[in-house]
Length: 303
Image 1 (tube, rainbow, N blue to C red):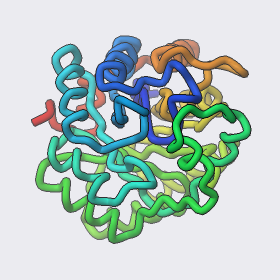
Image 2: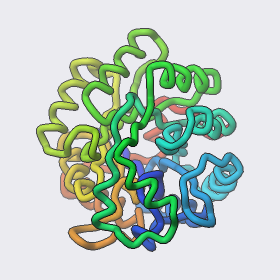
Image 3: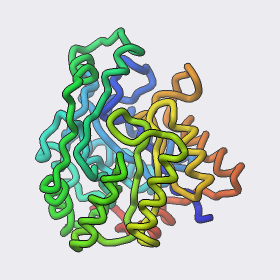
């Protein structure tokens, strides 16, 4: 099996600061979390930023610059900037940092979906900030990623050499990606991140993973690198299954706050450690940033 490319997402747009004292909020905290994950074996860090005062997700280019400067001065880890941002943002807001900063890699959501975060309110009733309850409790939340939106993001980043982590939350998203490949708007190798276990998308059962893999193999043959992430409590289980299947994995506090039943993870590094340990048991090595760049055909550095 090839070496496992581990991606770490140390913060994000789903969880809120009231849910965990370990969720990084400021650029310095996010940078430290990303650097610790890289030292533990993550070849790629997938980055969001937050308002430093109340932790709500933002797409502030200045905050991203601060974050990238700190990471880039201390590590050669691959930088992956979000173009997903938050489902509450416009496409203009979401793509601004990637256009301005031209990263080697950027995420790209491959379809519109219902996003159900509201069950989290039952588990986290004590929220500090007003935006948190509004963010989590919305049962009408639609994460809009139309064909026009996706095409616009692809074309906006094409000339600067940014490649994509294609985030696929359901089987239909793989077919959407095949559509854009057929039109020549993207080229292989495709870095496909299948996202499982989030309400509104595909489930996290092993049969769901196998169905996604079969579909991707049928559509893309040997033109893709497969990675997968499990949301919430499914993270470590899904990651371990993915490693056994020869896939790459993504972990981090963006996707799950947990490090075992009822135990909050004290860092994203702890979750990366879980995956490197699982890879060792499965006789798989962990890919370096240089190997990830070669396999995904990325530029060697940020502009």
